[in-house]
Image 1: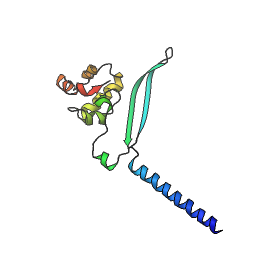
Image 2: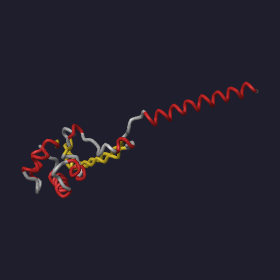
Image 3: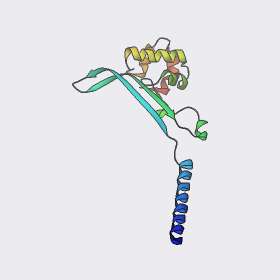
Length: 143
């Protein structure tokens, strides 16, 4: 009986040590994670080659940040460039110098009405997008 009680105590101590190790690992060594929701609405579909052209795409990201990574600022983009075919108005206005909220909304509205941009130069067709503004952002955008 006494031997069984000693075994139970050993098992409890081992369990507590392993639990402490798992909590410590999760607290200090697990990298930050982010969750994304992608929604694509299509309007043109070709049955022959089974391709589609997206009318709009919305990517919402809700990163889980630690206290140290919150001070680093906004979320990073791929290769440091913003995709003008998928970015929201908020992402455009926040990420591009010279693009305000009004122009960002015009870009998204233009994309919704006319389809995706075929080249980065096609963004100049948006009302209010001049050569000077395009020159400021051309190195920071992609399609």
